Amino acid sequence: MARLGVEAPGYGCTVGEHLWSAYDEMGLAYQRHAESSPYNNLYDRPAVLAALGPVGGLRVLDAACGPGFYTKELLDRGAEVTAFDASEAMLDLARAAAGGRAARIDHAVLGHPLPYSAGAFDLVVCALAIHYADDRRAAFAEFYRVLRPGGALVISTQHPFADWLRKGGSYFDVTLETDLWGLSGGSQPVRFWREPLSSLCGAITTAGFLIEELIEPLPADTMREKWPEDYDKLKTEPGFLILKPWSHRSRE
Image (cartoon, rainbow, N blue to C red; front, side, top):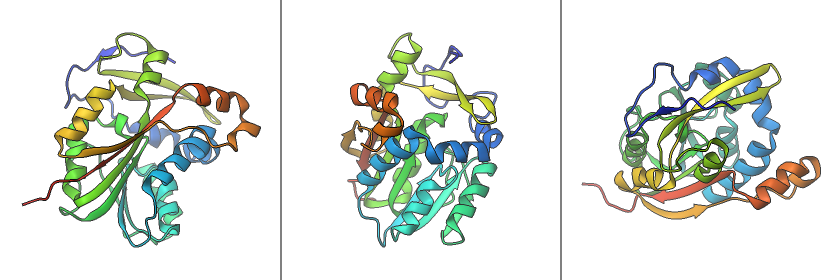
């Protein structure tokens, strides 16, 4: 795993190459990987879905929806789902997964203005994507805007401590990093922002949210049989982090 070493001391920093382009390049290979990957299928998704709770009848935004795993699951659970992603390849896959049941599946970018009215949603889910947004503060401000007062946001991301252990340097730096993912079609470099937990939480609360819950998930027991090494690792050190902020302030 290579380290780019590009420092970003503040928010709103941009880079020459779009961080979402990796997903256009991976396309179907990513969908096949994430569908059965122990980190996605038996670690992130069970924990995020548990944090979301019952969604029947709720207006839910699947932010940076990828190939539509959450979109489909939320629809199956009775939610009224709208989704967006920055990758056209992921949007094609998400639309196929939704089978025409989603209210809308749009092209939009985390950290940019979203094409939805204020208070349009009861719940927003953003799974393993916020670390691709060049401006996390702007992304959370938009989530706050499109949520109704009292609505909730559930986000999962790479655990800052785990990233620091892997990458080294100062834990407190906000840094652009690169991982090399091994997929069936070959290796794919994927760039993401690494930042300390205080920085991420500060972006959330600055937007107006109150963080109700911080979850350091454990792997599903079903991971143990097929992926015992991954299971043992995730039982002893964190891999992902889930935060559940809610919009506690009424809007004018």
